[in-house]
Length: 482
Ligand code: NAD
Image (cartoon, rainbow, N blue to C red; front, side, top):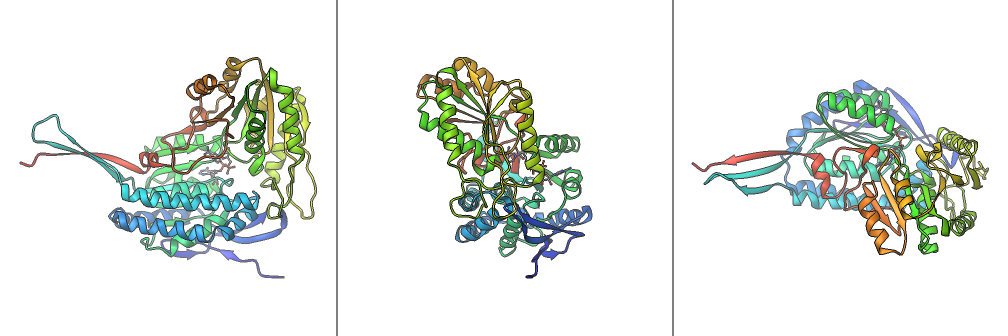
């Protein structure tokens, strides 16, 4: 039997063994152990924070060119290795190979975008209201930032936190999700070979309750960027606010996709199936609530089910697989529990939902569509985070919009219609941070802001030039030449 490789944390420029190790298991094949990954404890998290603090003056003083060179080199290497890293991503998280490679490509583009962002910098100079005085509004790095990521985008989410943090002169302690340390370690290894000062970037793999909590509690961590569940996010926001740290949190969704009578059926079916079930439905922007007006409802459901029947659920790395496995047993149990609740509350399982066996032992589930649901049912209120979507009927556009907005969440919302009037109205009145017209609710560009409203998000937006709001602090400087 071949030896299982072991991977360490990266603290103060050194590779450091953890207090413990955790196996990284392939959800397509639970006999496949990708590696044993170090698990830091709170003391090691503290050491990483201290290293980031020590490195801060040097990196904060780096030139835009130095920052560009580091980030551009990381982007180029990700691009060159996207097939290999994409394969690792699919192996540890379970999305298909095409999705894994696509996500790695996206991470590369994010690093390249923020390389250029380091050159663009920020700040402005204004004339004072007082004669002879000038005013500079300076953008300065915040300090040590703690970055906490979920498991569903193992390389894109770390990229869209690490790249802007470094571009704006901050130093980083990064804690990936327990289920996907492989891509995080690979990214750390690439960063370790750049010209970053030792300690400017630290990787601490480990439990949220230990390593994550240490980042949340440390007064030396001046800003926290979190993506994950609502429950963890809300605790983190409260703790950060109590010690006056900057905080940004992207959390769950129950994203509506409205389909109106006048929609192009092919476009609507594609948008629904793509955003509800691809990446195994494990996307915060997934269309999990499909709101369909009466005139198209039956034709739409029939066409969605026909399309679902063609989707191949299998090993993520197998050619021809459309839908990879669910990430783990816990998530699979949660998916099944929500399907059960939906049926007990009166919904009809129109298609799918069953657990299936394949050649390898994995967490394979056929995507599920539940019809006959109302917006009051549990399935319409709570995030499942799996390949499970439900259909709610609406009489007309006004009712559909009201249903779409009747949720505590506000991440992404979509509408399929050929009516310019309804599309324009929806773009203005959908209560969500991102709105899509005739497109899936999931799938966004890398150079523009990303984030939600209401219960989905807290703090400034991530990505694009807007990332500057979180990763810099503003200083206003007045000068009178004398
Ligand atoms: P999670 O909240 O369980 O974990 C997220 C991260 O927080 C992990 O790294 C975890 O270790 C860490 N953590 C756990 N306890 C902690 C603590 N006490 N202190 C600090 N950190 C702690 O979420 P998950 O299951 O990994 O991810 C799924 C969730 O993420 C879903 O709700 C999904 O909607 C959400 N998500 C949101 C977005 C977005 O941008 N809005 C994107 C992707 C995923």
